[in-house]
View 1 (spheres, helix red, strand yellow):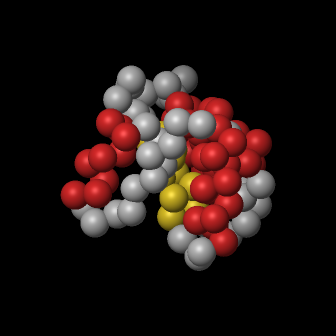
View 2 (cartoon, rainbow, N blue to C red; view 1 turned 90 degrees about the vertical axis):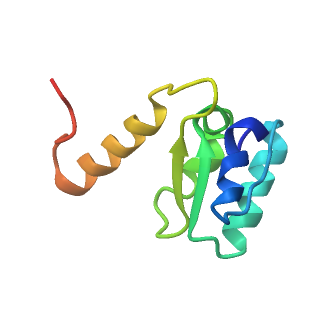
Length: 99
């Protein structure tokens, strides 16, 4: 899910793509995908920041795994921060930080 330019390449990998530009519609699409048993959902960082409350509803659930990916505008760091929080929660410390 994300802007068409950012997600179009995923179609070449055989993945379903869902171009989204409106936060309310994107949140609805996320709910539908989760309800249709999608195990992994890739969302651009820009779109994820617009629907963060909806994404938060799935953090404590086993599925779907929601993976944030950079869009054509570049990496905002949101995806890496998300992974870092998940690892820290699982391991008990931030092992990914390069401090």
